[in-house]
Image 1 (cartoon, rainbow, N blue to C red):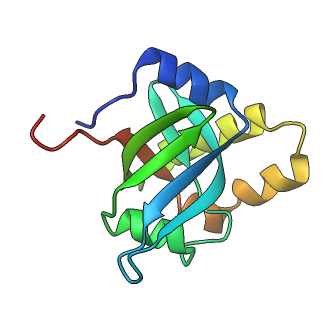
Image 2 (image 1 turned 90 degrees about the vertical axis):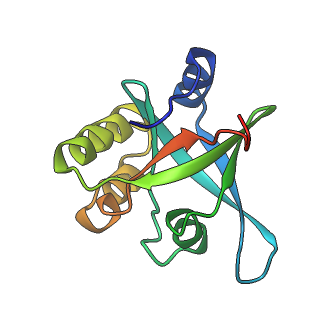
Length: 130
C-alpha cells in the first residue's frame, strides 16, 4: 500500500487551484515544470495529463523519475502511480467536476476518456535511508 500525505498537506492540495510538478528529465538531465490541476479523493492526491500520455512530465513520472510538487511555499517530493481502476478514475473525474466547476469547458476535457487514462496518484517520496 502507498504512502499518504500529512493532513495539512492534503488540505493544501485540496484547496489550491494549481500546483507545479517538477521532474528531472532523464533524457536531458534538466529540470522541467508543468502546471497542473490537482484533486484529493479520500486521502489520495491525483493529477491528469490534459495533453495526454505523450506529455513529457507524464512520461517521466510514469517512468519512475522522482518529482516535486510546488504548492504555495511548500515543496513535496513525490513519485507517481498510474491508476487503472475504472471506479477510482470516475471518483477522480467527479472530484475534478466539483473542484473546478467554474471552468466547465476545461473540466469536460480533463474528464474525457482519453485524459482519464492518464490518471496518476501522487504519493510522498520517502527520503533514501529513511
